[in-house]
Each structure stands twice: as C-alpha cells, then as structure tokens.
Length: 182
Image (tube, rainbow, N blue to C red):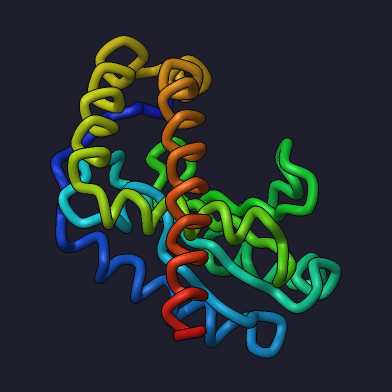
C-alpha cells in the first residue's frame, strides 16, 4: 500500500482525536512530558487537511524520551529518531494509512515556538488558511501517492507563511509588551 496525500474538508472530530491521543501520551510518558500541543492543519478550525493528527511534545530530556521508545511502540508509534530535523524525535502512527505524527523537542527549542506561531497565525488569519488549503488541494491532486513531491509542491508557500507568521508573532509580542508597560 502506498501513502495517499488526500486532503479532506475540515472535521471537528480531529480535535477529539487529538485529545484522545494527548491523554494517552500524558499518561504513558509521565514526568518526561512537559506539554502536549495540537499542531498542523488539523489544529486550525476550518482548514482542509490530510486527516493526520500532528502532535507536538515538549519534553524535559530527549534521552529520557528515547528510553521510552518501546513504550511508544506499544501505543502504535514507530520511533524514527530525528528523521532529518536535528533535535527532534519523530513517531508516525498508522503505517501507510497514517493517523498521527508525533514531533518531540526538548522544552525551549526554537522548533516548538515556530510550530506554535505557525498554528496560531493560521488560526488568527482565516484568509491565509484558506489560501493554504487551495495549495494543499493542488498538491494532493498533483502528487496523490508521492509524499515527498506533495511536500515539495507546498514548500515555497509554507516558507512564505512561516515568514509572515514569525513577523506577526514579533509584532504581536511587541504590542503586548507595550500594553504591559502602560
């Protein structure tokens, strides 16, 4: 079976899927886990997406998380190590019929902030989310069974979105600091 990059209309059920998985991870990972976040397209209300729940874990120590690889496997997650991103631990679930991606970083990682800023930017800017959905649907149509090409098709748009999101977050943080000083 080949992974399919099918983009679906937004489903409110994705939130419940995230909450179930987050509860399971909190219970299983215990003190290693500091925080769990719903990220990716399924975390943005109204955004079309592949029905794969992206979960971001902030952990106290990556080595301690690595020691729990067999525990993650028992939950159906496959430990893939950094999988191309230094400082990350990646755990897909569901094989070719992928259901979840867990991305774990040590607390304080810039990757954590970037993922959360990207999510929050799309939540705050529905027009940007809709434009992104158009690109995702086109990528799916062009590369339904080629995950790497699907990602590459979207990459320029995603890079531009990340840049705007980081600018927005910087401006947002500066405005918050001014309000606090008043």
